[in-house]
Amino acid sequence: MVLLGARGFIAGAIFRSLSAQGFSVLPLGRPDLDLLKPESVGTLAAALHHDDAVVMLAALTPDRGRDIGTLMKNLAMMEHLCAALAKTGCAHLVYFSSDAVYGLGPSRVTEETPAAPQDLYGAMHLARELLARAVAGVPILVLRPTQVYGAGDTHNSYGPNRFRRAAREDGRIQLFGGGEETRDHIHVDDVAAISMRCLMHRRTGTLNLATGRSVSFRGVAELVARQFAKPADIVSVARSGPVTHRHFDVANLIAAFPDIRFIALDEGVARCHTEEMEKG
Image 1 (tube, helix red, strand yellow):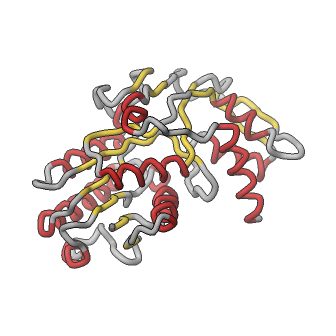
Image 2 (cartoon, helix red, strand yellow; image 1 turned 90 degrees about the vertical axis):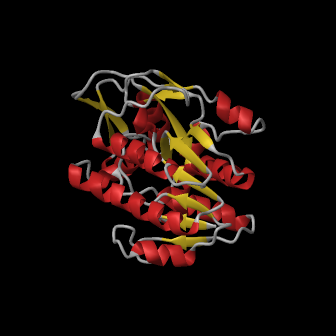
């Protein structure tokens, strides 16, 4: 099994989960394989076997830029992966996309919801999905995670990870408006567990990674604030856009894995806090 983008937050959790179950995994991060470079095609092709499963998480995330240059770099990474797979093939390709492909229009989302990205980041993931599906003879699963949180996340996206960091460093959490917007938040350990099962069963198609339970950002902030001996203040700042809500129908995920149990948000936030405090 080959894990691309292995030094990332989600990839690290997947690697730990697979290794704990005794899977043989070749983790490749940018120092090992720079998919931005054309010569990575030959390097990757030499490392792949036709019976390998490949998990693609290598990407420049929004904190690295949302401009045209970042878009083109992300497309180049997928182009080089596809070129390598065209040479060698593989038994199973799992591509980590994003719920950004849906845009913010629909409030209820299923795998059948039409993709309608509203920024270059969402457009990039949709284009990479199409590139991956164009590789002949390769069974592919596209995973579209919603907001992922957990200890060790270096990104600063609006939600549990940013709130905990702000509470610890500044003693306060800033919410846009009243924090009324509802979103689904999934713990990185759940993402890793689902990914491992998808790999074991060689699932194909498209699956949204979400819990099916949406909570307001205000509710998330209150959960985070309570983790500290002196609860962080929650303050309101000017809203830059309209209030939007999102709920994921996870019927397909439950149908695939009927025994699935998600980490409850309050438990996940507390776990994240404990793990981060133990690191110092």
